[in-house]
Length: 261
Image (cartoon, rainbow, N blue to C red; front, side, top):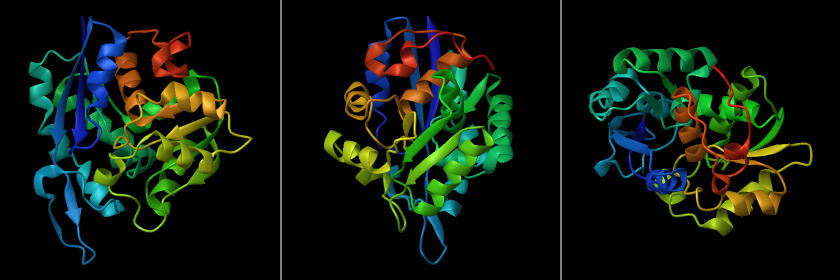
């Protein structure tokens, strides 16, 4: 039995995780703990998002607060008691907004608090791109252009060349809205971001329901597609030194060998 632990911000596409648990096999167990999110108003005032529904404005200041040490460590004890072998902060934007070094400090703090190997979705993307053997990627983001640019910069620090970035403009799309997107909307975003020089397409938002669509997206785009919840689980398995072949989860789950830390 391999037990994996995840810290997931608010509520949006968390049902992707039990779906992946079913696809990966009966000897993999996932425990997901919801962390609190903060809404930052246009006036810059902070407050808890009502019901943690994922409606927090996804500005850089709100994202930094969402990924703060206090918020992450609050859920660590429950994951430790669940028997988790590794813990992953299941949020891309709440990690890469700290920059390459800051994101490393974030997961080091999480590892110390949990007493377990730890990582984040942002590092999951960096490792997953290397795993599938590509260097040039396109990014299809539901974030504001400024936030999408920070993700591209993070990937650049990881040695990944981003040849195309598609953001949502303005303040981006809120998580609750993104969580309601279906396949057609996701495919339209991916096509808009894709580039002929990109060897893979990245969808970095953990608020998107993508697990059921990965094979169809890869077929439509004729290239590997890496999605946030997919790489989050893969990263947890990587930390646990576990390899699982699951073609229904896309190219990432059919490649050998496992990338080492």
